[in-house]
Every structure is written in C-alpha cells, then in structure tokens.
Length: 282
Image (cartoon, rainbow, N blue to C red):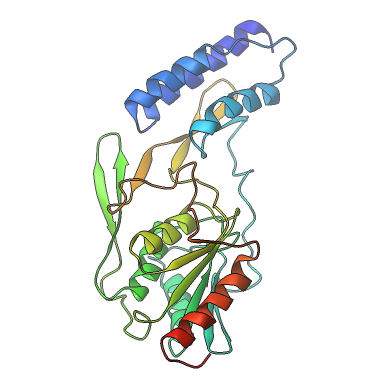
C-alpha cells in the first residue's frame, strides 16, 4: 500500500469513528489519533488493519479494523457439545454451566434455560459457571438473573448517542426455590460480553459472590462498518451502565470478590461452606 492509499483509508476510518462511536467527545480525539497515524513504508492491508486496531483497542475492547469484509474471526467458537446451559449436581451443590447466552426471546432457548434452572432448584447452594463464555444475548441475561432475585431488578441502562433504555429482569422469571440459595459465580479471563454483564449485575446487586480471575473487559457492543476502501471497522455504538455502581466493566473486566486460579473448583468449595453455614448439610 502506498502512502496516499494509507492516508485515504485512515481518513475514512476516522470519519466512521467520529460519526458512529457512542461517545461524541471521545470519538473526536480517537478520530484525530487515527488521522495522525503516519503511513508505514511497505505496509500491507493486513498490517495497516493491525496497526489501527492496536491504536484503538486499548480504549475500547470491541474495536477492530479488518482488511476485507468483516467476519467474526476473533470470536471464539461456541462449544455446542452440549446444551447452551447445562445443570449438574455435585453433592448437593447445583452447578449451572453456561456455554453461551442464547436468545432469551427464542422459545427453545428459554426451554433449555428453564429446564436447567429447575434441575438445581432443590440444591443447597448454587454455582453459576461463566468461565470461558464468549457472550451472547442480553435477553438471556435478563432471564437468568430474574430467576435468582425475589423482586424485579434493574440490570443496566444502555447509553447510545441519541437514546437511553433500561434492561430489567424478565417479569415472572423469579423462582422462589432459587432466590434464597447461596450463589457463587465462577469467572476467568475468557468470560466476556453478556457473560460479564451477568456476573457484574449479580455482584452489584449483592446477590452473588464472584470467584476467579478478572474477565475480558468487553462491555460496549457495536456494529461493523464498511469503509468502501477494502477495510471494515467494528465500532461500539453504545455502553451499558450499572445503576448501582454508575460504571461498567469495559477494560477493567469484572473483578472477582475472591481471586482463584481454579475458579470453578474454588466456587464449588465456597458453595459447600455457604450451604453448611446456613445450616444445611453439603
């Protein structure tokens, strides 16, 4: 790529960031940073994409520039070897293993979630395993969270450029068999996006103890935009804000209450202690 083409591509990416990024003030200086990036001698399309991504991503985990058409190349393959949410019982401790947050408005996905929740309803304590979950639909977060809280809960407020809207737990989702049980949430460096939203809300609500390692730190969703010059840029178009903390988990990740190298094992051990502590036999 010659210098003129690099400048043209950088200029177009800057225009898109300035126009589409959810925070107009931040968008201005991010766009200026892109425009100021000097052309590189002997640059390739892939090399330029990587340079701009490296410039933007420290400010926003979802940012990405791609040579050619955008495809979710950086997204991990979802483990479909079993149900999206699977229940197990380990000595009186219910373990809900989430592989992905499927669409909470899809009848089949809801049935899978409800079946898993029902399977652990008679347990003494619960572990929600969110380790290495790449994310999914906020609607399933609303459904799962709703099962664990007695009253409707405000999950977050989503801030976009020109609008605000609130996410709440699903009406009627609360399960009295689950709302009083000790709840531990296992997370790690592979817990991302919607999975982080779930863990963050349970933590801020005081409903669960989060165990493991800091999560990815990808809070702000977005969309791909074609530059028309052979590149695509993925730009966040909004940001969730927790009504209790006034913040989210972008860049910082969800910080566990209890650090652990083996999150699931540690969460199960703590669940056993919690069950014993409330007079139950684990």
